[in-house]
Image (tube, rainbow, N blue to C red; front, side):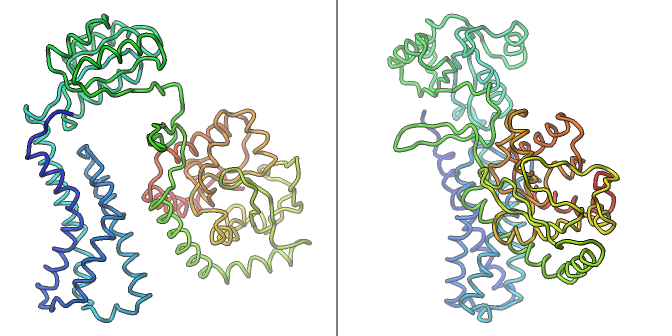
Length: 472
């Protein structure tokens, strides 16, 4: 990397400390405003909160190098992180029985006011970072070697995100990952819209980099090709930082990320979005909401069980084997709504006006009350409130052979409701295309999972219960 100004260095350090510093400052300000004495207990609270904010919020803040374009999305991320901090503080207060030591008014004011100040301070700092990175002395020249789709996308990103501090000078369009040059209209777009020079002579890269003092070179050539090896040897005669851009455009990326295993770089093409703090947040949400819903719905569930027993022979609960997280078999509970309880190698889906559906079962299926016992599955950890709906084992074995990427949906815990269900993909799948559309929504959920998405899906599910035409 090239030398970066002291201004950028200081702003980067400040970004790492911003979130803990603001929360401590707000605690001091709130206690002072209400004339509450800042005792040792408040000092301990400040230290614990600083650690929690760094765990829940500070790491993402310090690792992020780009200014968020969407202020609402950024505010949502701050809000989610702060909810995690507050939840952890409540658990600590309950466990240590220390909540009575603090002023309720001061804590309430602090908990409510801090997120708004955090958002404002973070946005201001990010704007300062953007202005600093946009200055001429901090912009670093870059070239891209290779004509893959990934290199063209990288060129667009560098052009559209000047806060990255990069200025693309030239793209060498020969020897791409697909061994073909960029199309004429793509080259024209680079020249006319981005002001990027294009060249097909790979032999000219080293001289251009040395003459123009280019500090950053991105290589998008086929790994192991003669061109790649020759280019790496040529660039050893420069002082440029060299980055390899693997061409993963042929893959359907799910939570793609890079890492290293004992110094060996690896690229994850398909990964679960639920790790670390993300998993803890989702699991905590599942436990809290499922326990609350189960408590509130228990009288109704008892009534439903009695109605089922009085109107048709058989058990009130129906158990069926399905695939859960990582494709492991789980037992899913439902209220019995049909005269049969299929759980074998061949299962016939319920259809509209299906004669097998009981009178009570028709009402249960239309209102989704037959799914209430799955709250027990959620508390067991076999299911989540939100996620791809688990299908019967027989259907999994059928569709995994017909739909590309079908089993990837099992990278997260299956849910009572999901993105597919709130977008009309419920009930019988009349064709392979219906199931493919459902799977597409499930994979979209994996790509873009966040805590707010789960909340939105739960709200939309509650609304759909009363007017879903696909439930029968």
